[in-house]
Image (cartoon, rainbow, N blue to C red; front, side, top):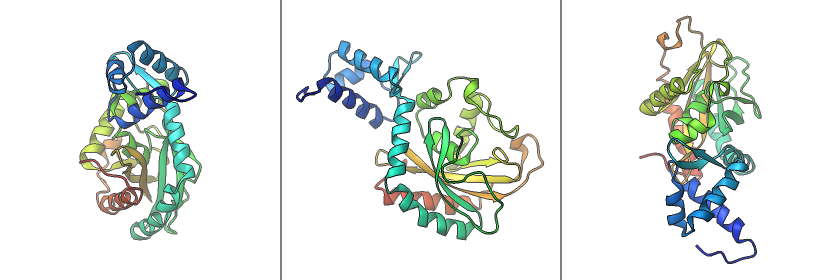
Length: 264
């Protein structure tokens, strides 16, 4: 790559960020240097500075690099300022009417779900998932549906230890292996479910919205009143599969509207 311009280091750093954002999995420093035509020493210096600012994350066990939390926060800010909410709101209105639940649009903000829009049916209870509210992504259906399609290294960077997990109702993952089991199940069936993890007496189903790189940037979900007395959570017999088709169709509609593409 060329270093022309008044700020070559900045241009190179931005090129590294763009490369990390375009890859579906973390990348080695050697591959970054090769693809961008940079000396390895320069590449390591850029990655070190980006990591110090939170824009890159080093995965020592894999000797690879991925996006850091600051990059996710920038992406969330962009989504809040751009038409995603305006595109999604009418879709949420139709979805709420069709399902009788409260429909919401959320994005990742660090390891939390940030809610951008909400359309409520009169038949559902008052919920904590209001616009602007942030909730633990590992507990919400919207968060799980996004996390399920992120590279494993990025999920690990978001949940590096037990302190990253939050317990609200005694349900939900408390460790990375438990979270990975949830994410595997979500990818397999194509939608995420949480039952009583955020609020007792409510359950949610969600599906991811994708960008032009087939990366998850948001999720659409529906919350309905439901109480399952079964313990553990996995023993609850209600899979909410009847809600999934409408929710997945709504997520696809928003994906197409923003020029995105779902996974193959």
